[in-house]
Every structure is written in structure tokens, then in C-alpha cells.
Image (cartoon, rainbow over the protein chains, first blue to last red):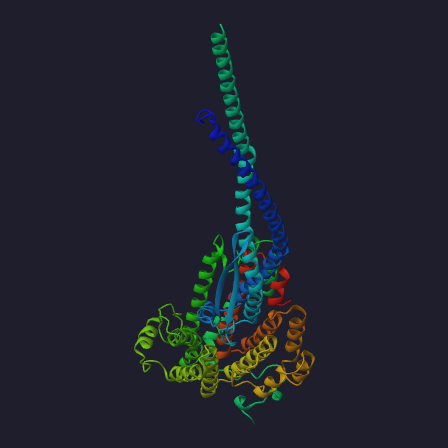
Length: 205
Length: 344
């Protein structure tokens, strides 16, 4: 940067303003980084147990479902499950956490999840589907929180990089340049002074 | 003297009578009795269930007629088991002297196909051609019949089932009503046909199956706390009103309601398991075992349709058990769960 800079007083004033601005930006971004970290830790704390619960519920559901499917005739399984009666819709709206747009999911479910008769189906299928229905709420909450965590983590990474760039690259470089221009201007000032003194000596002689 | 069709649940101790001998089935009975010796014993199935891995469970089948399953993956095994079931059904058709009996058991696939086709048709989905080939009506015929909405090529009992299912569906456009109507028509048909064939064994079997289906339905409705008390099938020994009354009782009282029936023990075991484990494995296992017991009694008839029918149904049950164990082992399910479903 020092090679391309014009060592002028205007430039020096401009750079000084930029250093102040960079310092203020650094301060604000540091605060943003800290707040995002706090929010992220809060969400991550909720995700751990929620994920375990959802995994356990889904494991139980799939275990029951496998048992049911293995005990039923394949054509009965196909007939029972091919056309579902449960209608499921998911609405997404966005809220802002530290100017990061994060999704909020809300579901609407209508109809009964048991979509078949009883004579040719296994009771375990009922248990599996009812367990799956119960797992939906937690599953959606988990998806929402994981997406929020993902978006916040990306934003945190970006903010941290910006803070680091300001702290370790932009501000030191600006200060170096200011120093360089200052020394150049001082040198030019000294040149000028010595030239004037020489001229004064010549006039006096 | 009351006929088997008119008997009430109090007229027998554990199983309804299996019927008389029929010497037209002498050869067929002898053949299935010899084939019965190749069936997997309970000990083999339990060893498979207790095996430490899928491969070990599969190894235990190496000395049986399922040895061809060795080295196959689960999908291939399922296909091979379906092929096996097809062979058993084909053998049954060859051995059945009465065409009526063969039609009666083929009707299971017809009703399964009908259920699938009607659900697709009434919900305006493509009819498709992926139907079971084991029925009286061939899979390809289903597409034409339902595309053209010309049901006349179908047998009368299927047309009646279609009419009942369509009427039931359009009452509140609930897809489950199709299944309820078809299940009811299925049981009505098989029991009426068995009575017409004067086959006491089949009448007893179907009426008992209607009871066991209704008991499971009652427990499933109770478990779901369902408001609509529907899905029961007609023709059982136990009156439907008793089963509907049971739904409003607590689990202890349900057992007492069956005290005077042959189903007391299975209801007790099934209800206890349902309360403790929130699962229907036990009641389903007990129902299978109860029917298995009746079929075993049928196998003891020297000559008649009973051993032939019993062999078909026992073999189908065995195939389901093999599929259950191998699926469970492949998916690392608990041995206890498998044993709970298979029975001790």
C-alpha cells in the first residue's frame, strides 16, 4: 500500500479518518461477534438433548415399522401405505437474530395418520405411525434450530474474519501508511527548511 | 344338533371342530404330511432369533429348504421368500380337489388387489399394474376393468365389495372406509362360501379369524382412543357389541369380558404386554399361535381338505416368520422383541 500512496497532507487526513472508521467498525463487529457467539451457544445447548430425543423417537418408529412390515404380506403393506390421509404443510417465516435472517417453521397437520383398515395390517404399524406423529413437533423444532445454528455459525465465521482483517491487516496497514506519509512529509519539511536556510545564508553573504 | 356355522363361542372349549375325513384328499393329505416334516421347527426359529448376527441366522437355514437364501442380501431374500410363497400356493392349487376351496383361498389376493385398485381409483391416482399375480383375477385385468369402470368381468363377490366400498367412501370421503368395507365383504364372502362348501374346518377357521381380527381391532381402537368404533368384521363367534363395549372399559375389565371364551388367555397375555410395553407384538403372536393350534389339529386329520389347507397356511406363516427374523437381524433389532413376536 505504501508504494501506491501519495504522500500528501490530504491523503494523511483521509487515512486518519479511515483509521477512526475502521476502529469503530472493529469495535461494532467485535460486539456483533460476541453476541452471535452467545446466541449460538444458547441454541447449541438446546440442540444436543433435542437431537438425542428425536433420534431415539425415530429409531423407535423405524424399529416398529420394520417389525410391522416384516410380519405383513408385501401386497397388504403396499395397499395400506400407498395413499396417505394425513395432510401436512410447513410454513416458513423469517426472523432476525443480529441481522441474520433465520427461519421459523410452523406446521399444519390435518387428518388421521392411520390410513388403513385393521384386518390385514399389524398393530405395530399403528404404534410406529403414532410415534412418528408425536416425533414431528420435535423434528421440526430440531430442523429450525439446526438451520438457525448453521446460519449463525456462517455469520459468526464471516464476522470473525472481518474483525481479524480489521484488527490485523487494515488498521495496522493504515497506521503504517500514516506513519510513512508523516515521515515523508516531515522529511519534505526538513528539506524545505534546510533549503530556505541555505538561501538565507546565500542572501546574507 | 347345531351346524358349525350356527355354533356360539360357548359350544367348544378351545377350537371349533375340524370336521370329518374326506378320502378324496387321501393322496394330497399324504403329500402334505410328508412335506410337513421339512418345515422349520420352533427350535430352529428360536435359534435364528437368538443368533448373534444376520449371517449366523442365515447359516441356521443351510440344512433346510431355505438353503438357497445363503449369500443373498435382504432384498433378494424377500424376493426369494415371495417366490417360495408362490410355489406353496401353486402346490395348494394342484392339491385342492374342490375348486371352491382353491377359489376361497385365492380370494385373499383378489381382495388385496381390489383394495389397492379402489384406493387408487377413488383418490384419482393412476390404477397401475403392480398387483399380486396370485389371485383369481389376473393383475393385468385390473387395469382394464378399473380404467373402463366396467366391473362385469369380475366375480360377483368382488362387484359387491366394490359397491360397498364406494358407498362407504362417499359417505365422508374417508379412505379407511374402503378398507373397512372390503374387509367386511371379504369375511362375509369367505364364511358364506365355506358354509356353502359345507367345509366345517374352513368355517371354523374363518369365524375364529374374524374373532381374532376383531379382538386386535378392539385393542387398536382402544390404544388410539378412537372416537369412531368401526373396522370390525362380521362372522365371528363373539358378538360385535361385546367388542365395542370393551373399548370403553379399562384393560383389567377387558380380560374379564373374555373369561367365558377360548380367547381369554390370549387376550390376557396381549393386554398385559400392551399395558407394559405399549406394543401389539404379544397379541399378534398369541393370535397366530391360536390359529396355528387349530391348523395343527387340522393336520391330524387322516385325509381331508384340512391337512392341505393347514399346510398352506402354516407354510405361509413360516415364510413370514423367516422374513421377520432375517429383517430384524439385518436391522439389529433386540432378540427379545423377535422372541416376543415369535413366542416361546
